[in-house]
Length: 569
Image (cartoon, rainbow, N blue to C red; front, side):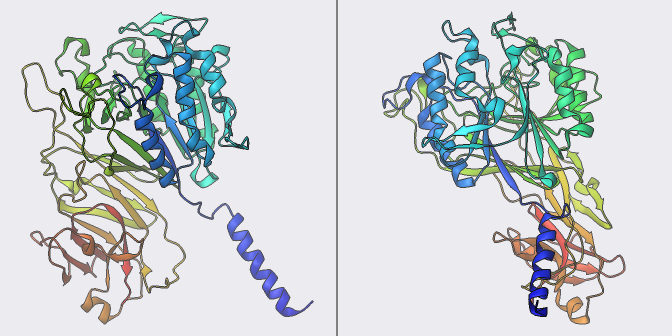
């Protein structure tokens, strides 16, 4: 055997072992989430049969296909009338996703329980969505494939729940996530009523042992877990909850459910029901647990308006909610990206918005195209994140961002200066009028460890781990408040030329993924280098290096990934 062959074979084995090694980083992957899909008005274009809004669903499907998601989760209310033929129509509307290899995982909402003599939709749901038990999908050409693993349902509570409440895992070991779907709706063996008269079945409390076992971070072997329920923890318009009553009902159930999520590192509970985009931090009744709730924007011809904060049927519980973001009267969808320890959520909605509801959809009484869905132009409205190796900071309006500080494996990042100057409010008023609640910003940090210190092809050298920072902006605006960010560095690769010319600096990634000077991505400002520490009063675009503290800093107005870097000449 020749020495050249041995060298080649050894090199190939090294590459193979690197790929198979558990330390090799997995590729990021995406899943989509879509809201309630109900058609609730006339259909002059004959485009939305059996109360299913195909004219909306088809447009959103294409966005998921373009985004390359692995699967889509639909948060219930799959049709408006819940009849068997309507549910079959909704299942067929997901076939374009399935035919290109994108999975579709739905669950019931209250409208699935109101069909005529169809047993609360259990049979038609199971026959059309076997994937909720197996993860197996069938293309139109009869090819089969599987998405997800470890499927489970709380059958020890009742076999009626098989495939209704369910959980599964997806992703490589470094980016694996568990999905837990909770269905409390009526079944053949248990029927009760919630305050709105919707038929309920096995409660969250009945299922809590299963929920907690599926979320157990010591046993689940996934870095992330997401919980879904059609009803929110605390909605904006609907006042019923997933706890068999109003927001004050069954506080012990609530405390146990909240604690099971917080104690197991679950950051988001994702729901529908309210037909608006809403993000909030909700506290448990005992105040010991806090969870971020994401209520999904409508994929329907129906839109709701928040009820007044002092409405008596909130029973004073709205004080447990901190409002982060809200958008009403829009059609939207969500792309979740799982990248190792970091999860990023992008919310897209049409750039028109302000659609009218039900009989006035989309533009209002007297409009020629009333009840005809327009061609939507979806744009990114908001990005937020969390990371299992990062932190979250709640910054009220008027407060300083200087509270934001985090450290990861020798790299420290701090916001030195800046104020939450937002004046945005939501549309949740009170009976006396008013201007809505002031929105609080959630600033999240996350980290990716820099790779071995090998200079990249474009002559960029990273001298710190990589910080991921989100939450600095308002919904619908890419530009953030002006703030000063600093990161410390570890390197001996500095020359007098680097110090004089600002080649070594705080860097960020541009739209093409290349590392560039962080101030180059600013909106406005003048690029100005300072060889020395940051001083209060430095204008937007000023950046520098402080050799005494071994930090780079910059005055910027955008979110992104950041690192200390020697940039290319």
